[in-house]
Length: 303
Image 1 (cartoon, helix red, strand yellow):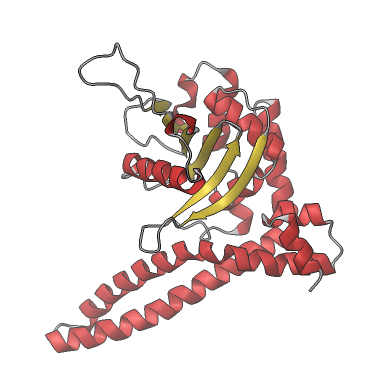
Image 2: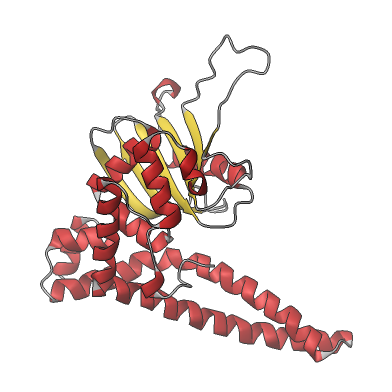
């Protein structure tokens, strides 16, 4: 199910759209990192949700859910509620893309930052019943030499929360899986979800993308049906079989276009920001809600 497929009323923390909105809160994001990674995070220098990375014009682009940088680390948090195939290879590609997009020219290799790719899975991604799966790199011939490439791949299985000894981590995983808030932090997450869903501007944005998705699906379905009928007639197949095949192609193209909707978030955010400016919203609040930088919003204010 795509991220714009659910009704607004049914959205919760484990849905990508809401997860990204909540994680824009620096305080919540910092505490989440400290719980998930057992790290001391002094200050987050940069947060971007739905981050697009296109390193080369003909290379495969990616979209990261919540991309974070502090002084020592680059971290990507991914909320995953289905489609657990190829997560390991996906994690590898995300890690390399994050490095290429954040490492300045002439950086010495010894100065590369720690790189974390973290998947928060609703169910067990590997089927072994473990609450967490952590990649460890070693030399095959000896463990006497540490293989420290500063790369960390972690896959959480929130359905296995009961097996976690650490209270805070167990509570976070349970909140993702069952939406039950048992600690001060998860109650803050719950309140942030409620606050996000109470904002009409966010509901309007979500509905806007739902409408675009439906229009795209209908357009692709009509094209696919027409092509399917023509192909079916040419091959002498029954029209019903042709339509069934075409429907499958149409749904596949619709999913592809739906995935590409994220690329239009920036322009939509500018439209929404412009409306909020006219309604007198505080510029910092507009920045928090839309993800736009303050200087971009100030430019819109002067248009």
